[in-house]
Image (cartoon, rainbow, N blue to C red):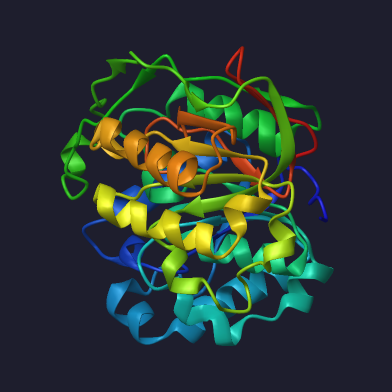
Amino acid sequence: MINPEKLKKGDTVAIVSLSSGMGGDKEFFHRYLLGKKRLEEVFGLHVVTMPNALKGSKYLNDHPEARANDLMEAFKDTSIKGIISMIGGDDTIRLLPYIDYEIIKKNPKIFMGYSDTTINHFMLYKAGVMSYYGPAILTDFAENGEMFSYTEKYIWEVLFKNEPVKITSSPMWTNDRIDWTDESRINDHRKLIKEEHGYEVLQGKGIIEGELLGGCIDVFPMFIGTDIWPKKEEWKGKILFIEMSDEKPSPSQVKYILRNLVALGIIEQINGILVGKPKGETYYEEYKEVLKEVISKEANKKDLPILYNVNFGHSAPICILPIGAKAKVDLDTKEIVIENC
């Protein structure tokens, strides 16, 4: 995998809307402004917003080619050192016909987002470029009150530094909701809850190593079988990471997708699994049972390491998982070390 150059203060980063166009809708525009401001003031970056990113939900829904063009132009522009997704959505898959993988390969740079942006990450994986499953503009950068220190810490450590990164469980988390359309509450902080579980080892022991590859499990069915879904042999030795979306898929839905991964031969290939903290801890115990049922019993992979309740994706706060980076997971100390991100 090609490692993009790390960011430094003064670098230019681009904001793109690759799925939902809500950042350009008037009721959410103030969150876009706050996210942009945080990139500038907290991280010292120069921010450009790509031409179609603020054209609103209706236009971007009707014009997936415009979204893809913004992404391609951001990669081609040598003055741009990083690209950050506005937010996820549900139809990034429609960008597939418009992607030029050679452009991405010849112009590697930081790319970050999560949720439906999973599909963009696998586009970069196909191009052989490392990408970063992490914070988005409207969610994490525009967090009410201030950014979470846990999230900010990993942005600095993963995107700005060339050193191994140790990821540990966040001591606090939140499922508090503040109406995004209520601009008067933009300075209100969400209520934090003490973490009672930490990382949980569902099975396995010792230390595992492998390259990280994964994303939002709800999104997988949309692109399994397409050109960007890795061949079975490409999963050899990987550490699969999965998380569940805001839709809070039922345990049965998660079971069906896991069974699909077994049928595809992927579970047989990988070295371990990291599972994100479920949104609001909904189905917290049920998801654990599904994982053990499918992986341990049905697939007969009783020793395949599974580390549960990791802070990434649709949780808050979150860390960053670099796709294609080598990770070492210590199941005894419950630590994750990213070695070459």
